Length: 334
Image (cartoon, rainbow, N blue to C red):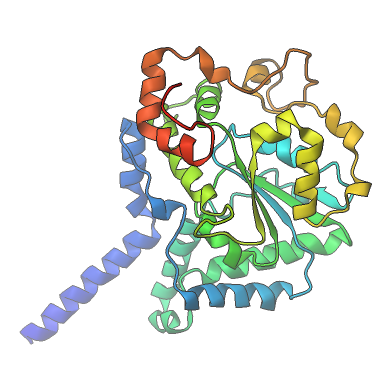
């Protein structure tokens, strides 16, 4: 009898833990740390650890739902908001074979909320525990992703979908959830990202300087892992330095079009030269997210240079290594 009660008690505790896990209460410590300004960034937030069997399973789901002959979508992911994903996506959208924001999904943060899908799956399994025997960790997310993309693609005919999201949380899942699609990872100098963010976003949960620098550094590390020679290097992924597109738009766009398997002869390079600015922190107060024509003196690069020495030193201590990994600096003399 005592043993039975003990087992029953343990089962109840296990059930309570399960309920808390799919209620997503486990995220409260992260939100609290963010609110009070302490660190909350972990490598697995960007590059979840999956075994070979798990990866194969997710790719098999994608092929089964969308089919091996599906039209490859193009995804633009930024290291953080303010990294230039609007500019990159708008520039790509000048190609007539792409359809930007299908379904009026102005952003597509599916990977960013992957842990929420994982929580939903835990709840599903909790309702009938034997389901756990036939479900992989991210199965529900994989079916949702592939089914959603298939439905969005259907009315577009020959056009290919173009999505964007200014985050790289859980970006390590991309090659397995979207094995036949195109990934463009946008890097921007973290100092400019932080400066722009500080001048744009407000509210009680706004990220302070340290959190922005930490997240940029973590996102930079995740993106660079997809660069040639990186641990996650993959033919479908390309790292784009935002500054290259600003300084040499035509050459950089030709590289992007080649990566995305898009015919450069059908691209409007003249329109690229006069592409309006959308979402710039310098124009946000006046125009918000409405496209605004660039002025002759518009220059989004190097705005961080007005930082005083103590602020530079803080960023250097937190994310100086990321600047070096990404090639923005070769030393600490800046």
